[in-house]
Length: 322
Length: 110
Image: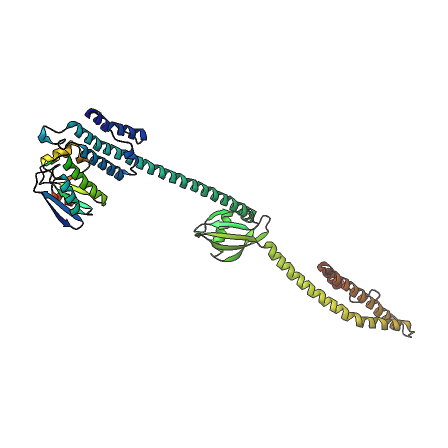
């Protein structure tokens, strides 16, 4: 190879492909196995130095001797070629290493991207599941921000807001219910009715600045409690009536019996027989009332009790036959 | 020919003197003695100010020293090149592979 060819080889830009290296080897008269045995640039340089030594040893001793009529140009050219080869091959090797590293990083990036996309997909699924759970809950769930500001609410919470919207309910809660506590609040409803809500404010796990607010309609529950109290009182009244009717019935039976005995006798004074008739009539009426009372006790109905009491209040102090 | 070795920490300075040339007549002896003196020293500064000429065998000695330093995980630096030595190294472009400095101090500091 001429100096010109060597210079062209040196100056030409090259890639990092195997054909490039093969061409380099051809130009510089170097075996391709020199590259094959090298795993990195350092090893390549070692191989070149070995080859260099080998070529030097094969040269005549005066090949480079300027004193003996000038250096042996062909020998010098071959040695130069080896140096050029080492330089160019090292550059190619470095490019190949860099390309490999770039490829490895690109693969790692692609892998990380794949995992990120999968994680995002999973997060989206989790979010959808959570939305589904929140939507399905009959209890209201609200999320408040750091300053108690309304962020979001499920359908149940929006439904419980009544005449207010969810953000107005959130403001009411933020001002009316201390953090980390429970309290009941009353809301006006359409038509003038009121709704009682039990509100529980709790810090959100993983995000202490935000809060989860559980909102439960306890209007019916409170009414149920009131009804239970009323029924308990009614039961007490009925029990008392039962005892009273039983206690009245015994002397009443004796009173009625005596009145009937008196009526069966003959008295000179007709007013006695008349009084006996009034006593019997009144006793019968009282007995009828006691029977009705017993039926009311048996039925356990509040309205019947009320009716009975009204009837008693309206009852005349004396009997019909007076 | 005289080879002198001065150790400065992990660095070894090798001076060649007492001969004008390293050539086929003494190259084998110079190489053997130099490698014996250097042993496994990784960092070597070779002072060639006492060498006027190298032939191919002499170049082989320098390549051998360069390889030996690399073999032990270090570097070989050459300094004090006379015009005759520099001409030969530039002719075969070994100056593109070797670390070459003007003098010993510069080589040590590098």
